[in-house]
Image (cartoon, rainbow, N blue to C red; front, side, top):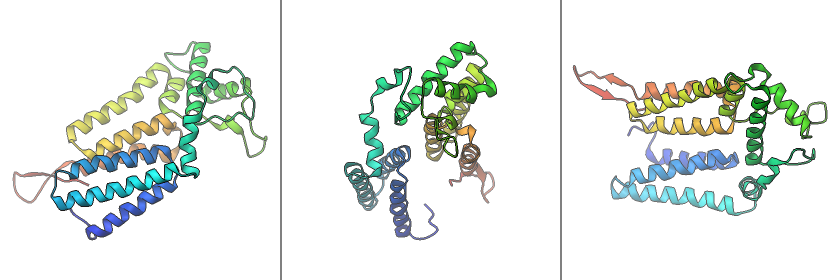
Length: 253
């Protein structure tokens, strides 16, 4: 391993950024952070006893931080508890009160219902509804009496897309679009297998989870992330020839 500074500074930075990740209050980011720590802990078990002890200490410290945050009363634990306490039967109602609150799971299940209803009504499962996707979703919000804002800066749910790129692709471009978007992840998996890169594996998993959580191709910064990070990992793990003739080494980012 190559360190820009010494190992201690790198470990301190890991703890520092782990704390900042908790402050983000993002369920997805917290889950992936803990999964990454757990994964690398098992990798470090193959190293020397000293590395094992340091890895165990780091994992336990991070786990204790996350568990304490989730078990205590704060904004982060509230976001997790509201998912557990949410009533999924709410999604099946035909009309809502404008004051009805939807947690993340309820809202995304509601989007699945709306997309199915729109595609059934328009008989557009194969090709989708193209640029009418958002206007048709807004009609669903209006017809079910969901919160529509105050008419000024707050537009309520009318600004919300499907919050799932697979659903968004299906709604806009039908089964053709869904298959095309799915092929992107198949290519990432093929690239991951070819490169045998752990970094690419985590990038692919994060992008997949992000696509299930947001309509990533509807925002500029997420389009940049979606195109930049796979290419970064790809070129960071490509084979390069070193100074020795006929010898190929694998450079990792």
